[in-house]
Length: 133
Image (cartoon, rainbow, N blue to C red; front, side):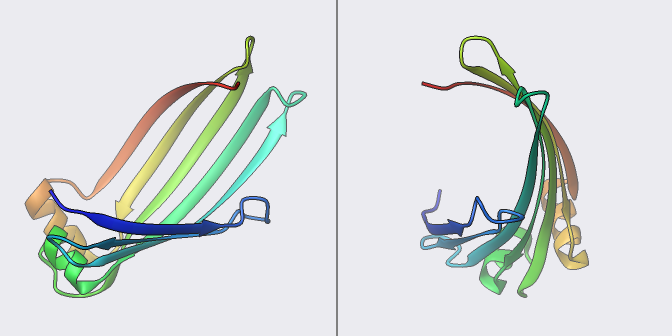
């Protein structure tokens, strides 16, 4: 296990909803991982359906990349693209299916991940059910 400190900041109401997050590992790795992201959402069908797309790019310090991938350099690590469709249901419920694609950008990071984790990209599907008070 390890410990992290992190800070996030964003402008959710601005065009593109820009945001940045910085994660500082203060225990085992002692490295930094930063993410810049943006998103766009639009409502359809009398606000009963909200379609969303988002993307982010992450960068790791040399210490972070050495600890997680065995690569001793700072690099752009990953690209994440997400699409979602939030559907309003009766009783203040919302059902949100989503699909996310994650890939590693740097060839040395990719090679390190493949050797350690046997994978360099990932597609994830999810379904979230939420209730609003």
